[in-house]
Image (cartoon, rainbow, N blue to C red; front, side):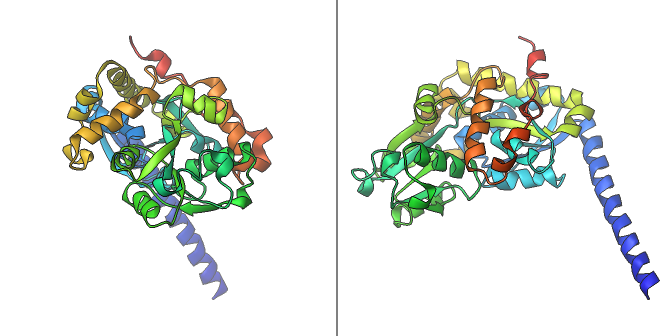
Length: 344
């Protein structure tokens, strides 16, 4: 019985390895044939607009790629799809590459689309007089996307920088979009961090006011003391090394889109996006894009000092990064190899 049990375990392990190998093989072969699947951490968020805009403009197709875009509500869940090998890339926050290095996983940003978070700290109108800055966070309920998310760490940083301990406020998982709006209206949160188009909807309806705006370089420097690279396309290091031609094509397409964003109006950009992204209010969607588009750079290159600032924030508040901060090799979390080769 013991021999058969051991044999069964061995066969099961071999089968699991075979399945994984087949999946990796299919993924690599598909990529070499121009088929790429990318997970976006909230495909309708304006901070990740370049992914769908590239698709809509036909730039992926121009590069000979057949890109399938999928979505998860948050970057923290999107990264799981990459780790499991279900997708070849993720459009999400750069800080996940640092977080994953602490788990001995090599993930690289191959095109850095934004040097600032694009996040906004909004306060419910009823609390606007009581919460004027992070110094007023004590005793309040603060919303973020999910525990361990970029918005969670940034909230902790803002509070601590203002002299408020993370134990002095209550962090609440508020999600994004309708769930965030509902949490604010129902009193589940007093304030919280979110992005457009949610910000535009809240401000336009009078439900909230902006306390901190990290959609611009100046606003980000004022809030965080430096840049905070965010929206990126990140991929497994092995995939990047083995499929350079495919990665170069992806980067070519995305950088072309970044240039489009920097040379076209919010109205022109909105006109290219899927109609349902406007949520029935095209004018408000145009405003959301207009208020956020300044976050996107035009060349896809990483700001080295910004990357250091991201590590500084995570080293203080991420339970995974904090004990390993001195062993983090930032040079492995991003590469400019491909953006440096983009023509023009």
